[in-house]
Image (cartoon, rainbow, N blue to C red; front, side, top):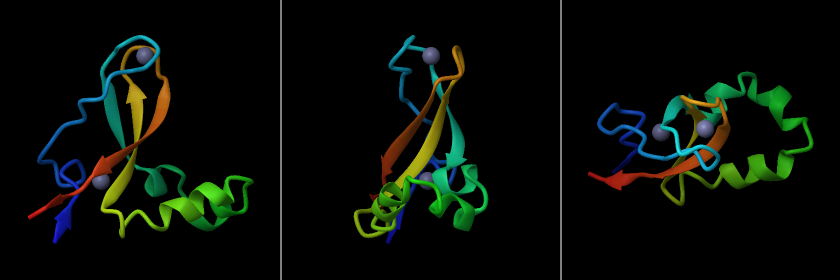
Length: 83
Ligand SMILES: [Zn+2]
Ligand SMILES: [Zn+2]
């Protein structure tokens, strides 16, 4: 089975902010972050949401990264690892 190490607390986010090189903090999975999934789907980003529906097949878990320095927000696809 595949596991997202970030979701399971086995690994920390090591991404750096593209703007200021600050440490990115994990703000959770993208679906949790946007809250009501149904409401989110109605926004114009539907195409991207559809893209994410494949994330379990491609063994990626999409997280929201927030820069601890400048609060820049970025979506980060975490590669799940086979256990
Ligand atoms: Zn995850
Ligand atoms: Zn930053």
